[in-house]
Amino acid sequence: MGLGTSDDAGVYQITEELALIQTVDFFTPIVDDPFDFGCIAAANALSDVYAMGGVPKTAMNLVAYPLQKLGKDVLRAVLAGGIEKLKEAETVLLGGHSIEDEEFKYGLSVSGFVHPQKIYTNRGLHPGDCLILTKPLGTGIINTAVKGGLASSGTVVTVTELMTELNKTASEILGSFPVTACTDITGFGLLGHLAEMVVGTDICVTIESGVVPVLPEALEFAAMGFVPAGTHRNRSFRQKMVRLASNVSPVMRDVLFDPQTSGGLLIGCAEKKAFELKNRLIAAGVKNTAIIGKVYDNEREIINII
Image (cartoon, rainbow, N blue to C red; front, side, top):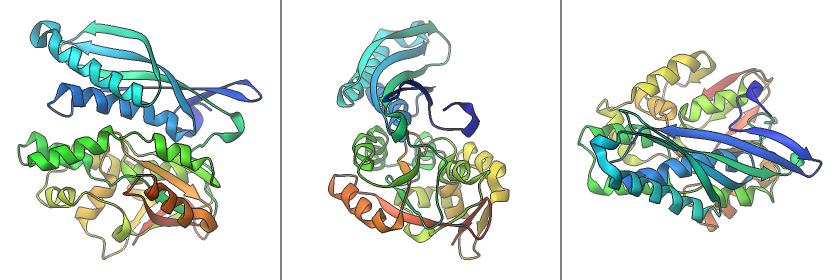
């Protein structure tokens, strides 16, 4: 598994029963608290392994840091946050690499294992499959409002907890169900990542906008115009594939294209087991899980939003 299908991570087969998953991700701070930033960056990097159906095993830090400007304490807190999430994921930190840079960036490269016959890819959806989403949308919009000083302290806590939540439990549960495809929702937004699952296939999907889990504050801030630039880029890139019903508001459209950080998993599952999977995820604590749409074969490469 490599660059060809735009999957979440690369996979290299070692034996008939073992394959190596490799991924890397880093970005600039999106929250003020350095420990929380470390947690979010680590959860985001680990997510790609979970999205492939794998178990993360080792990680390496990636740091670009303005030491003279920020001092050592901020960096210590960020790294401590990253280690906290790696411990939760039962993943070993082996080391890493750092450079001095004017702009602070942090993330990790992560390696994991998966059985070659049990890999989840972003291709493979079948007509009749249900689409399941495990986290609410709107973190990009809310983070934009946070930068503008409009988000309440409670909203900041809520969105931070969401971004630091691992996709570990969800990924583990999927192994007991007929999952046909999986990806995690990050910078391309729900519709951008869904487009990667549909493009080049003979299928189309329909998303019920009214049942998509969304952070309520995201709708409020989007209506006020606090929409990140990435949302507009995502929409511009994939707009030819997306067909919106007349009752879908521009605000909801922006939420569906909103770039997420450490978002949830988007899962394709056979309809006969989809509701059982949803209920199992909710019972295990993945409480925002929802069935948001279905796969059809009456059109090619189209995402219908109703």
